[in-house]
Image (cartoon, rainbow, N blue to C red; front, side, top):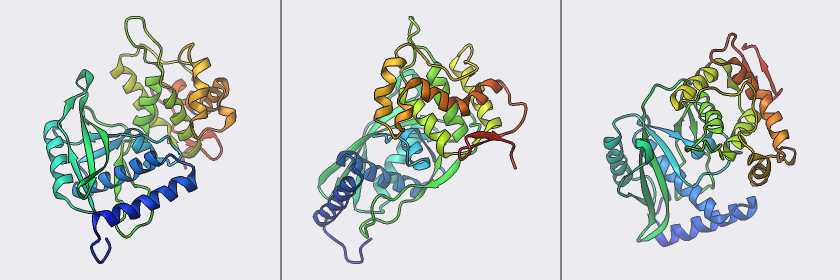
Length: 304
């Protein structure tokens, strides 16, 4: 914090200028840059107040683990305790735990479909004026996670004395996240069995394989459990197109992602991802030998 308190108007003008310059220098949309900053400040307050009460999921969790990943406009939190109590605790934490110039208000909870949790709207204000708002989904911990929970620092977007450094946050395990994405690709919907349209999950899977190590044993276990939870009769033994629409619709999503041009073609993307994930799919239901994915060499290797 600045040694001499500054007015909300001065803080707003200063951070707006810094975020505008960041957006210009990085060729990013200013609205998304503002949202990213506000969400980082919100999460810093939540996890500073209760470091172990939550686990960060979803696109924001991917962004913390992998800055190259797509940016999400909303937050997904996994509650470590009772869901109704967690939302009340969250509301109290962001209201009473003061770290910076923002004031956060958590709105009424609305149930998500299929009894998965609740969603709330979070409004951020500077002084008497609204700065931004975003959606927050809170889900309960219904089962034990397979992989290890990692704790990583939230990337600092801009340097400013008006806001203290961001904190570290516990992340949804990589093995479980990969399992969610693989199974989502092949889950069908409705009476007609409509194929998945989760194009961004393939983007994330590709980015994970490019930049992160993957443990085979825990990931195979996580995929098999997620398959059973979702009631999927089987998964393909290699990574294949989830449905006919992918041949024409994949390219648009790929072009609007960090993926290189050679991966804008579906066959090329599946082949590249398959070098990593075919081993996982082919090992179901249980990996016979341990292995670790080397993203630097694009190969599975025996653990050291």
